Image (cartoon, rainbow, N blue to C red; front, side, top):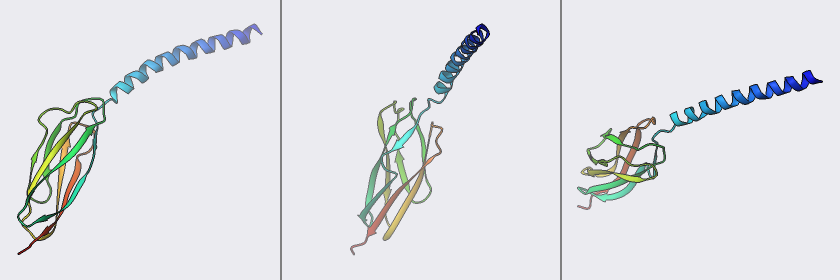
Length: 137
């Protein structure tokens, strides 16, 4: 009977020390995964505009991660778009806006797509600006 008690005591102490060691490792692993993260309010805007209109739309994003977010670049895949990126890092829990401006000079439907790169482990985001261009001549 004493052997069983000693065995159980030794096993529980060994498991207790092992669990403590894993707990410390788990905390280190959790710290390593605390990264910047972006959540966008809208990935696309849709509108109707007049031929020749210059339009500016804001794409609001939130920092839902553990470190500051920095938008690094916005590059058009289609269309002629200019961008105004935030100049400062967006702190944890805060929001900011990427502004996209374009002149629409072709009647009918136009879609502009652009990629946004950033300092998070997420892939670049593809955002869109869809408009119907009316020509009232």
